[in-house]
Image (cartoon, rainbow, N blue to C red; front, side):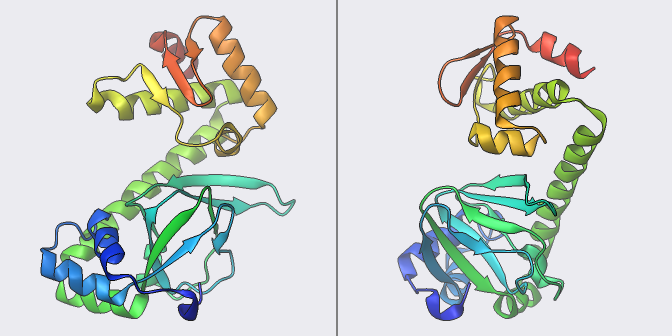
Length: 236
């Protein structure tokens, strides 16, 4: 992401900064100071924001849109790591290391990104060390999620991985009071990549779950969980 391709947009940047958990605890004037150092750029669908081998120089914030982070195997197969929505960020390790990036970031839809150079961010960390703790907390959460994914891929078959993933989505929805109704946060193609399967196999497993009365597919990404206990029994 070259600096001359980034555009300043004061009002957008303020909103962008306020969305992010590592900055939203700052007061307004401090958020404005952070925003002034950031630059924004709009990417069209399926544009690459960064790729493996690029220098690690920026903290990237998703202002609008959606971004997927993935790795590529030697054969070119995509392995989805996570999906980022507005308020999510990536590239935070640039603050602590000069190593090259090891993953790819690609837009899922038209997306606006705000970027803060590592030098500017490091200055803020000296002034506001609480930001460091926020970054470390998020990194710890992502590490925990990665460990879960590795365990799932290494010890479960596709049916168990899918059931486990659906249960995780139900758990995330509990706070809203509509845990039995979930909306997949990604396309089925990306979900297949995320659980280490193919789109065809995923579709067959979802159809199988539906035929057994465990779920009901009510839309392209909408799923009603009919029998959570049955999903739990598969995982166990």
